Image 1 (cartoon, rainbow, N blue to C red):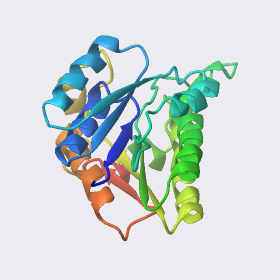
Image 2 (tube, rainbow, N blue to C red):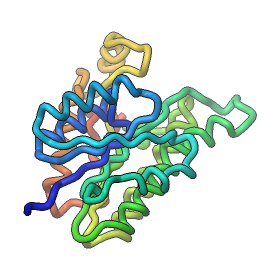
Image 3 (cartoon, rainbow, N blue to C red):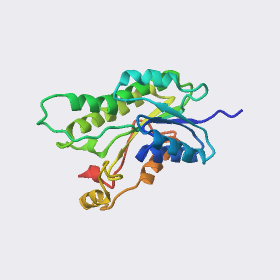
Length: 239
């Protein structure tokens, strides 16, 4: 019997995560959907993915408590250990040098770095044969962002870990990153937020979720790429 192809997408119920999960399902991957509180959204996503003829399993975990990661991993059903891991789940809040404490930094690091770090180790420990890890980053890793300081620092650290882990985990496991730019407005924002900012970047237009999912499929299918960060940002990283 042909082995089941499985992909785990963290934060897979909404926004980029949902788009990535749907794209992988169209490629024939059975999907492990991680979610935290988005129960209604993840059930909707499960139904939509299921219409594509693949299996779906749900994994619930609160990533603000990284100690629960091993429990989530252990709950993966037999025969469902992933061939592809997409570290997409993220928290995004403003912060700057005026903040006196480290609470915001710790929160961003827990979710945006520590969780992908731990999942990468678990993935590598269990993977037999070839595997692929994709870390969803941000074009901000290429600049010094004073308004989203803690968020940017957490993504910069994940970008460096992407390169380090690619070197360590070869030849069987490939690790790459995707750095999106103006794709989706922040929660509560609207398209005008993106369109105004798009006038400052080289391509002067807003991207879409499909631009990211195309990058995901490309990095999975090209077997001679590892340790790379693909900027899907309309040239914003050049500024």
